[in-house]
Image (tube, rainbow, N blue to C red; front, side, top):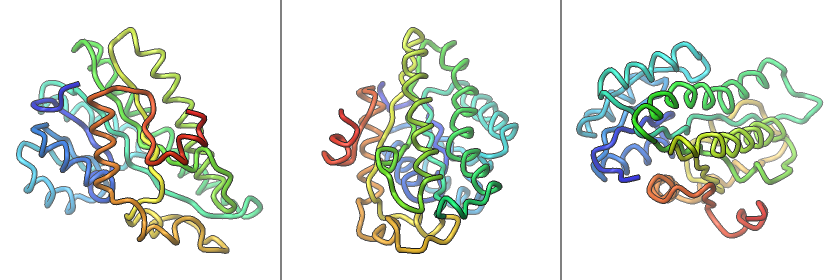
Length: 240
């Protein structure tokens, strides 16, 4: 898909990978709908990105997610792409998992992207096609102590994404996934729970730049392959 002059929704656009992706899309001439919980951060970002639209939404509130997509469509008249980036980590040993927090993580990391996809698919189908990019995680291919909830949520997203890709091919709607490795964002600091050890998030400050991951997102939109990996190690772990 050509990026210039097309409309893209980016969730979790107020920081990290989502912020870098929104900026990269705007720099390439796209119109970007900015979705996140932080109204103030979105307003500030919208002032920097010409033609962008800030929409405050909690991705765990599914009715609000559907309304946000409708608002984007009303504003621009179309939706060409969706980047499902919003997500959160959770660290706890299996015996210490809080069911309520487990439920919240799955609502945000799995059901939120699915509901957003359900909202844009009819719009894209009516337009003759579109691009959906889901930000996954290298932990989908790993067994990491303390991070079973997070990694399992990303494995679930993997399965839904690959299935949706096959189901939507006939509609010219391309579903791709990005698999970052450790990325230098506040993602680790914002995790839920308190792991016994440092865990993977202890090295986030030394990770890939979010701009690097944003570059993979743009590549996925333009090329439309199923999976994009931050490095060869993840590609080998995935058997790709």
